[in-house]
Amino acid sequence: MKFPRLLRFSLAALPVVWPALAGANTFYRCTDTSGNTLYTNQKSAHKNCTVLSVMVPPAPGTRPAGGTPATRTPTPADFPKVGQGEQQARDTDRRTILESEMRNEQTQLDEARKRLAEAQKLPSPPPPTLKDSVALHERNIEALKKEMAKLR
Image (tube, rainbow, N blue to C red; front, side, top):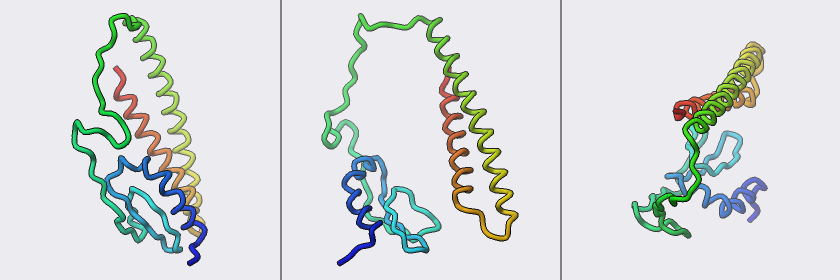
């Protein structure tokens, strides 16, 4: 039986990506309107998705697959410590970097939204890459906001 090239690649890559997906709870096989098959841990409303498996996380305190149980080791007494002033300087630098990244992402998001709005004025539908670009910058901004919220 001959499989389409994308399906053969997907099936061949499955053993490689399976460990990375171990944190996912559900694994789907989705088929879009063009007949392309995608294996993912995120169900899409625009695709025909079937559940392949549901993973149950290990019970707390049990040994992870292929690993050792996590243990808490106290910090050694001779472990180098950072002074409060130096830590504050590091935190300030981190905040400055994150704020700069936030400004860059916001600028790129504004440009992507502008390109998408211009493309939506045309008679043909906008390419999916424009919508993907907007979504990417929105996700990046959310991630940066979360990082900034963690700052002291």
